[in-house]
Length: 389
Ligand SMILES: [Zn+2]
Image (tube, rainbow, N blue to C red):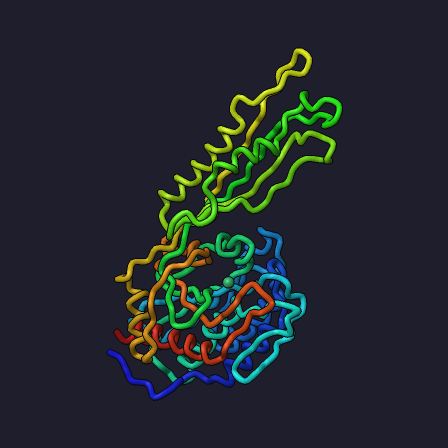
């Protein structure tokens, strides 16, 4: 069952106003307390019960994740969850939105924080409209996380067994009327190479350069874009003490990502093998002591892949909602991870709905309120269809 809608049912002016209010409240990772209290107030005013978990205490932040529960008006409908994150990247100690018609930017001294406040306001406006107009909907659970931008740590510290819903949407990706159903798994690598320090002018032959060994490893390493679904990067190199000392140590940090976990593991093994080969058999004799080069590699899975089949119920619902609104919603993949990866890794059926954020993680970030309206409408219609189908 679908319905033809003459125009947006959500209130665009209210949506814009709430967006401007929320982006004006700074909410850097681990400092989401002020926005969390505001969001808690909004959710309670809309009729939800709200709980705050202990994730903040565990990761040193000033609030935990919020879980809000709304009772539906259609008891036969399955519950759905809707999620976004409360934190933003820097710079955002103060945010001064600049409004030009429907486009909201900043004065270029900060990011806008449409990532992810565009998602939050779309969720709120959809639920508000469903309730005000008594549109059919089941129970809705809203999960608002902390510290998404610093390694998805809020979501990782959220206990998904507290949710009744088994399926839902994260709203946290750029674009509009698009549904991300595939996102990579990622491994994070920390590599420490131990050489031997020596005076570079007096006795370099008594040293073993850790930086040289790192260079040899990297020279033969596949990095960057490896194929359509796989990437790798070494992003940080720290090592040595002074230009006149043969560097006795170097630490490297990097990552690899792939939509295909087998490729992820193959690339991780390749990076490991390059370091091992560069360090193997490297030694230096000083007096009667032989110093061998050493290597420590720590490879940790940061998050699991997101891989929702096109015939999954959540995908069908969003697609049907797009059709119903005359805004067809295509599915796509992304190279970035989100809380959706974490929730999917814990067995929930979840996809990531684009929510109108643009040029994110930069001071040029902007949002078009018309995109927020489309997003809120899509959420509303998805929840409605889930109740009436
Ligand atoms: Zn985000």
